[in-house]
Amino acid sequence: MSTDKKEYGISVIIPCYNVEKYVEETLKSVLNQSFKDYEIICLNDGSTDKWIDDRLQKLKNEDSRVTYIKKQNSGVSDTRNKGIEIATGKYIMFVDADDYITEGSINYILSSINKYNADVIIYGINQGIHEKEIRKSLNDIEKEDLKLATLAFRTHKYYDIGINIDGPCNKLFKREIIIKNNIRFHTDICKSEDAIFDLYLYECAKSIVIDNKVIYNYTIGTDTNTKEYNILYDNLNDGDNKGRFDAINECLASEELRDMVTLKKLMESYAVEDYVTKQLFVPENMRQ
Image (cartoon, rainbow, N blue to C red; front, side):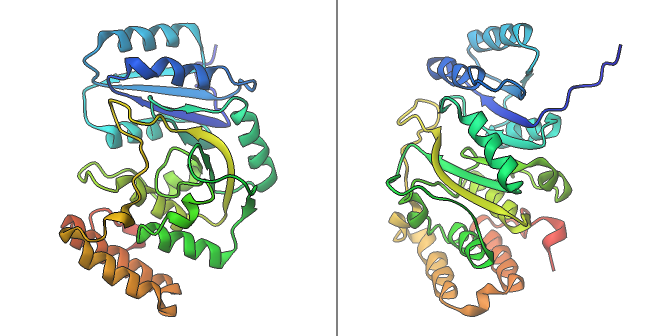
């Protein structure tokens, strides 16, 4: 009998760290979808609560779709990267263990895949405004705006239509794009690593779809990782950030920034200035 692992259409990656209060609702929301042909990768990032280990091990034994990895604590970025390495799905979806996805969302996601075959699909969140239904494939100008808005933390106009563009959890990523371009979460920075991951996916994606139907639900004010939305442009007067934001926003007014070479240089400058990483999180294939 073959021992090859089944390949799924979607891999749902759930990092877990001391989330006993919330993880049951998270798991229930993922497991109780009407469509069943997807894999669930639960990664225990060194939780000190033994209950989590027992619960996830039991879940693995009960459901063949579940892969359970117990590892030493290394942070959410490294844990997500581990999930990427073992995922088999054509698409990857991240869910934090203190949030939940909407009932029927996997079926809806599959309809988006079948309609668009996009490299990245950005879905609605349970915040912002959803009075107008938006479901469209972005044209080249709109994709550039998305990347520049992510780079400069000018995300409010997307948030205003119920979409979060600078976090990984309300999105579907084609795994081939992640693997081919060696895109990972950077483990040696602790600020905006989510936005950086998204930014490089947007850069490498040929097709991006936005859909503000609420698929992903943030839990407000959790003990493990507060999800209360904090738009960074509200804090532009912080001494460490103001100069960088001012410089980026001046550049945003220039048509020259539509040139991707200029955008890459700006991203490299952003990395060096903000994190002193000497282009550490600029993928090798995107450097000059």
